Structures are given as C-alpha cells and as structure tokens.
Length: 272
Image (cartoon, rainbow, N blue to C red; front, top):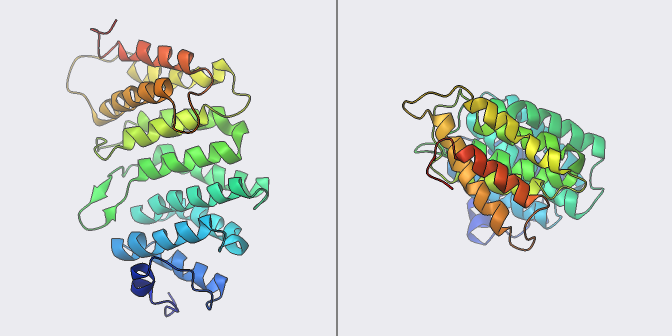
C-alpha cells in the first residue's frame, strides 16, 4: 500500500468530509487497500464508512466501475474480511448504479453478479463477529448485495432467490446465525420479491431448495444449517406479511408466506 495521502483518523473525527484536494483515483486506491485490512478500525471504521458515504454522494462516480471490479475479484481472496467486505462494498456500488443509471454498463454488473453468485452460497466462514477481526458478516453482507443486485438486474430475481435458499441451507457452515443474519437474509429475499415481472411460480419455486434440504430429516440435534434455515424462514414470514418500510408487501406475499408456513410445520408441528 502506498503511503497514505489522507489523515484518516482526522477525516473520521470530522464526520468524513470529502477531501477534494486528493485525486479520486488515489483515494480509491487507498480505500481499496484498507478494505482488506485485518484491523477493524482501518477496514470498517475508516475505509468502509468513507467509501459508503462518498459513493452515496457521487464523489466516487468516476471510479465506480473500478471499485466494483476490485470487489468482484476479491470473492476469491484468501482472507474472510476481504471477501465479506467485497460484498458490502459491491452493495453500495450497486445502490449508486440504481440511483444514477446507467452508471456502469449492464454487462459489467452481470460480470459482478457471476462472481458474487459463485461465492455467496459457497462461503464457509459465516461468523458474524470475531473478537480480533471485528465484524465479518459474510451472510449479512452477501444478503445486502443480493438485494442490490435485484434492483439493478431484476431479470436475475429468480436466481437470486435460489442463491439465498442455497446460502441458508449450506450444510458446510459451522456457525449459527447470532448477529441477525436471518433478518438480513429475509429482508433481501423480500426486496427481491419486488422484482418486476416475477411470476408466482418464480416467487415460490426457490423454496423447493429448502424443502429438499429437509427431505429425509430424522430426529436429533439441530445442525447449524437447519437452525439458520428455521430462523430465516420465521423472519421471512414476518417480513413478507408486514412488508418493508416505504415499499409495503411484495407481490405474491400470500403465496410465499403460505409456502414458508407449510415448511415450518415440519419442525413446528403445533402450528395450525
């Protein structure tokens, strides 16, 4: 990493004013290097917070595609914090793309989607928090990216729903959701259900993946993936029936809620 051109602690203390005297590309390079740091103060408190605000405000528009490309490449990075924050940064980039289309070509967003789709259901380190690394939150960050992709590439709506299903049922995970990952997934699924043109079949078909995961289940201790799936389905039922602030309930909400309830009657046979 080149020597810093920004006094980041001072910028943070001042509320992240944009340093207009520094070239935007130099800023992007510094932020990119900081976003893989194992130090949560450098990565999260400084780099991510600055990037999120300055992306939202349009200060980084000229390097938006480069930031997205770097994030997409990092889904194969050896360090979990780099992979996880790649998803979170990509979510912010996609939100800017959605706000000022066409900020990047659709084929570029499709390339990012392919990298994300290969990573999200396959990530095995699903810790929300680490006492040394700080927030990791691969599931929550990935969920945010999925919702952002649904807004920019709505034709992938059905595939995004299936990605979320495969994420929650991934049996290689060793960690239960304890940092509201289930709510972030439920929010992403509900947001994706707003994708224009999504049929009732597409809105519910992804739940076949969940049903298959439980096929042949036997009594015994609940493995982490099953716990995570139950928690996500319960949260999803609440989200689709209550709706999202500012958006209401998605199309086919009743059909989705009914299918979710049917699956939950397996572990919860006392439900009506």
